[in-house]
Image (cartoon, one colour):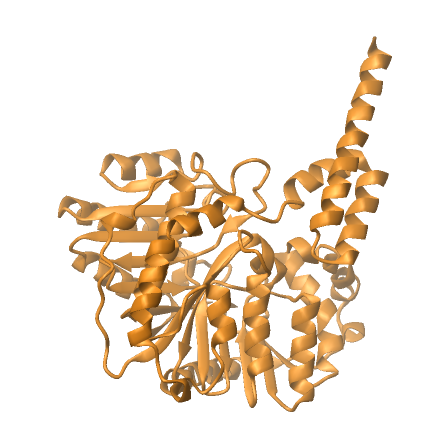
Amino acid sequence: MWTVLVSLFVLALYATAAFFALRAAQTARTPQGSVGWVIFLLTFPVVAVPAYMFLGHHRFRGYRIARRESERVVEGIKAFATQARPPSDELRLNAKPFEDIAHMPVIRGNTAELLIDGDATFDAIFDAIDAAQSYILIQFYILRDDLLGRELRDKLVAAVDRGVTVNMLTDAVGSYGLPNEFIARMIESGIDIADPRQQRGPNFRFQLNYRNHRKTVVVDGKVGFIGGHNVGVEYLGDDPKFGRWRDTHLRLTGPVVLQLQLIFVEDWHWARNVEIIDDLDWSTSFADPGVNALIVATGPGDRTETGSMMFFSAIVAAQERVWITSPYFIPDLDIMSALKNAALRGVDVRILLPDSIDHTMPWLAAFAYFDEICETGVRFFRYTDGFLHQKVILMDDTMAAVGTTNLDNRSFRLNFEAMALIFDAGFAAQVEEMLRADFLNSFELTKTLDLQPPHIRYGAPLARLLAPVL
């Protein structure tokens, strides 16, 4: 009997491996990925089958459904945008690739304020929460039960006591350590929080590898926030390990806030299977002159590799410079080619990364890419004044972006991300000033991999093997 059971188990295991191998051959993004999964599954099914269950899925149909159910709002925004669309000569570049990725138009009449580091960011967010009159939509990848997290909770509770509706999302992986008591107190206080342990989404059906990495606050449909900060005291620079935490957020007003609001609506629908479109304010007003802006939301629910395409579109459009800051650098082949091509065209290509480590494997893997890209003229800088976590793109003096997307495969294909793209020379100049100050607190990487210490020299190529999930 035992022999029969073992034989049946082995047969079922290989049948499952064969099914997953066929699925991988049909859905993997590259031929190399298909071959890798097929060989792995058929050769080591005991290890490969569980690995594929966690790592092999790369699309969320439910997010597409949510997008279709919010189409009437999308169409309303597009119709409104016909009168709000900036003149083509004002954009000074072809914005169509970004609009196609976002499924929404660039729109004029907005304000965009840089919020540099944690104090400026949370002071502005708390001021907006205190001024809320109708509703607050709030989403963070990480929410901690610490001084900052409790201050945010108390602000939200006070808003509920004033009659303000609060809808809150957080991620099951990012906020894994959030105590049940913290969530329960928020719910008891009247905050409608989607419990990350119970909501639909990336914590379900072996999909823990997918994460909602967005950080969004929308107040009354009039003021919005997006950027790199999460809710934890380390983002204020109060962690003794990291010291100063270098990060950037944006405060937005104008029609672009409705785009940010729509993205939250779709995330809420996916997490709770509840439609809140009709509960929100979709009216807006223009700032004059204001800036042109677009929210680009990307994720594994999209039909194409939108995260990578957003970076690719910015890099290939650059004529004079493209500066990118990210805590991680694990590019795909398309981004590597785009960066090298831009440098060969004479574009000033700079990548600013942290010198300190928060996650060892991504930090190590980056070293495996530097030599090949540097040979074409791309310059890498290592930030030394604390930990750099901001996600910023500066392209010529025509476009700058701030948001949640890292320059790595996880952000490109596994995470739900969002970036605010601002098409304005004045705003680009502000971002340039900010980044020049960051470059002053950095050093340029000139050592090739063979000159690095042994743990980097030998560890980087091994870490690069995990690039698809880092």
